[in-house]
Image (cartoon, rainbow over all chains, first blue to last red; front, side, top):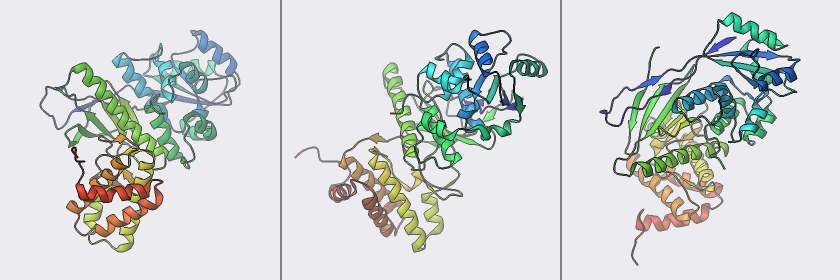
Length: 196
Length: 219
């Protein structure tokens, strides 16, 4: 499990305050990401997640093939927390909101199908926002739930399916390198539903 | 919890621009559009939200078409904020001034990349609205030309609007940089060759130069 900091949110100064030269940005809770590969029981895990089984800790399972860089996950989480604060979430929970935010469209079921765990998924990034239980306990619960091999987060880029990402985000042929792809992916997430 | 600082780096008529740390190794620019006190609150909220999204959409459409722009990180419409990439580099304005007089090759290369970017932009029917050398950045490292500040941009297929866009740049260059007529000419040449409607826009520019930016309303 690796702790990843989220970028802070900007708090605009109130309109009636005199123009402050240094306003403040609010920090968000950390997220904790665990990467699994060679998953053998994706079907079971998926069913348990759908049922909301108590054996599944509070987390979101993201199909690692759809992730270009951990920054993509950070932005999805930041936006989910922002929308939670503002009371404008489009889905039922913070965790489904994270999956929804990864998508460039406003279709919730498409987002969950594309970015969540599916029957054929072999690598997932498990993301938790904040920590409800002692880390060791959470780790054990994940290990009993998922039959797979936990590996360091630095391996994340190895699972990126660039043609798939190209299809989902319509990055076109401009996205020659990873950096460009990431920029287009993050931009498409930010402009969700507003790009023709 | 610790607090992070955001630093006000620019205050304009429509928006304030802040720079803040944005996670490991990243900085973000946050652009806040103000509420307009003279407008009805409900109307203002709708209009401002639309402007915020329109600006971010321009950045993303250009990026997708291969023109370098700041990456859009996040759009917070309730607060009228756009979070975007902080681009490290120097504005074309500083770039020209620090090298004056520029050698011919550097000047030609810069002019060509400006011309090409503007051609792609206008072919997408995006009119920048405030083209100056301060709104272009030469990216540190890759040296690619980054177009910024689409706060006054609009979507238009009209030759007139595109010609005025170029005219604004020409006037801005004349007033900020002496002896850059040759460079502007080179921008135009590249633009004319790269843009689909380049010829028509250049022809229109002649007309705009004769009468100025505003069209005469009568006769």
